[in-house]
Image (cartoon, rainbow, N blue to C red; front, side):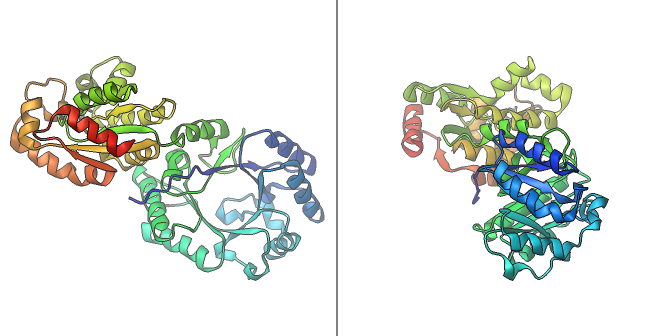
Length: 403
Ligand code: S3P
């Protein structure tokens, strides 16, 4: 799948109007474990001539944090106040000064500055507050940033449905597959887009913009929550997660792995049942499958706080790409396979598998397995056949391949 697992940097904005308040905000941020601070010049209401000295002071106050300076135009979500600055001139001054680590350059009004840059890096950005561009348009914009000499490409857009957030994430992953070395920053804005800010790093986005108090763009997530989530999902590869169709033997093999490896065992279904205080079949009946799937996706983050474990996943866990990316960030993903006939024999008397309600037969199992096969295969980092094999033999093979 070519997943980039690097923890994204966290960037927090300075959006104060005057020199003193700007510098005070920087002092406050100096104590945070954020990686980057963005000074949004369009919020600045003071004299233009003081600007370079503020940049100097910011750089000193922020110590080891990187400084990004941005004059966001109103058309791309900036404050109207920013219109009083001459865009090209201001960016020229910043490049000449060469103190900021990054300056933002909007691709749609990018001056011919690229040649002048020395230490300061350029972030070529594009913002669409109305809509989410199509996947190939997103890739085209990010590629434009690359081709026009920007060190980093950035794209932020507004979703009007959940699927549009997925378009943005998919485009991010594709761009990263095409140019693995080229840094990009992408985000879906607003409430709907929150998951792109929390999990965009799993798709290849290199920076997430968080807020401390008031944010500088819609949907920004409080810094502390971003950090807490990143601490979990980028906590290192150490778990062994078992995936595969219902009845393939995940629970049984998981117990054997626990015994052989002396690691704790986590069953995602059991974890969700305990948290919800009801059985899977009752969750499905009362809330529907989608609700259950959301619980699965949220549950994986908690694995980030646990020591190296054997994780037995519900049979549908690998169907969502987000789950797969999270699991792969946390360890090996082992696919167990078995023939539909074997599965049927194992699950035929089960009353807690709502997906098979009224369809407990080999044909249905076989068809559903075929539908799911590409998802399982794409998710797996290791695949193990189980038909006709002893549990201890299977478990030993898994440990050999994963440890
Ligand atoms: C499901 C499998 C179940 C459970 C839920 C949905 C599925 O887990 O998560 O009933 O969609 O395959 P098991 O595979 O452990 O039965």
